[in-house]
Image 1 (spheres, rainbow over the protein chains, first blue to last red):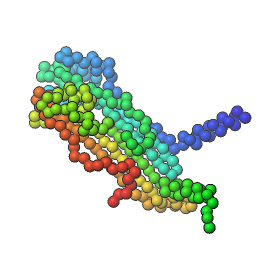
Image 2: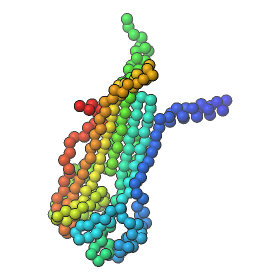
Image 3: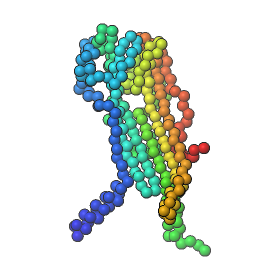
Image 4: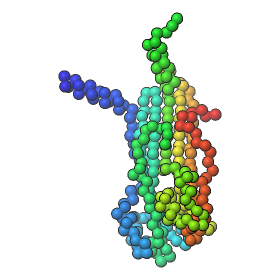
Amino acid sequence: MLRVRLMGLLVLALVLTQGCVVSRGTLGEPLREEAITQIKKGVSTTSEVVALMGAPERIVRGNEREIFHYYYYDGKSPALLLLIVNIMRMEVKSDNLYVFFGRNGLVEEVLYSKRTPNVQFKLWPFGD
Amino acid sequence: MAIPMKVGHCLLVVLCLVILAGCSLRRVVVNDVISPQRVTFIQSGSTTMQQVVSRLGAPDEIFESEFGLATVYEWSDTKFSAIDFGYAARAFSPYSPSMTLARTGIDKEQFQVHYDAQGIVRTVGFIRHEEAVPVLWFWPF
């Protein structure tokens, strides 16, 4: 009897989850907060920042300064592919870190924000 | 001749399934929306880059303009919906003809903040924007 129930539960679980797709995609490496906190304004040099964070994804020049840009993208996408209806939603958010260097090669400013912890697996395509 | 209630319900379910058959909804949302209400604190000539970043987060892009740095916040909402009227033919035919209406709306937006050489906000603005299409909007014409 127990075996029949277990089989029934397994079949029910398979029926309920058929057509379910859960996928995740990332771009770049996550920005390590413990490394970012070690970057000190007026103290850290270009090579120290590179040693901590690696080479930047982009280098921007502006106001006679050099700006290192590091980013990381995280996307989560559930989907329901049923016989009659297909629903898919994907949420993507990014983390960005900018390190500004002055003419003396020392860090002048650090701009950082982390949005990726707020990425959720949302299936319902309507609303926010 | 009146149709019994049970049969009526069954017909309604079948009708709904036929209408929904071949329906496809997809949505891709990138980053959070920055609404005009969220940026009212920015005052040209006095707000600094640090103050903007503390409220809106780090921008997605920084570039140099003629007067100083400019920052760009980007977000998008892409909606795709389609309906395949030929899908229902699968129920009774080995061949299902494709009769699909589909529409994709890419709602890509930007908020730009331009600073002067001292890092004080010079001007701000959203890119031009048309009203977003609803999620279920497969009429392509």
